[in-house]
Length: 202
Image (tube, rainbow, N blue to C red; front, top):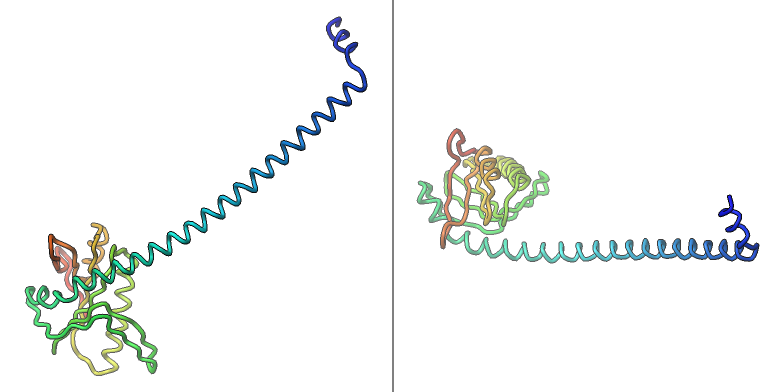
């Protein structure tokens, strides 16, 4: 009680008012600092998003160029490699485009190998994923429809080529009936669907 009284005796209205004003100043400064910190964080986040977009764009360009390099390395030797598996392809077309406006069929093929009986349609990716494989199935279906409209009775087969092929993606490609093309030393290997899977013909 005496201690409380002693403290109270040392206080005046001016001191209390000054303390209140100082506390108010500190609160306002703290609020301003928090607001400024929040602004800086938002600006940093915006800059990081812009950097991510630029990086993604650059990586996309790099991936396209790398994909083009892969195509130039693989396509010239595809006929010989497939012929080692018993095919007798006579022609190879790179970047073959299909644009049938009458039947609304549009697609593009990285490598198109053909003879009088069969066609091998090759999709080339740096790192194939399941979406790429599904896209190739759609491409094969479009090509089959296009062939039927143009009285092409040949059997169509598909292949997926990749620089980096994950095990699960490889199995999925086999399951869908595709040949898998992947690097091996200074060249590449072509593996037909194996085990319980067989090449699918469209």
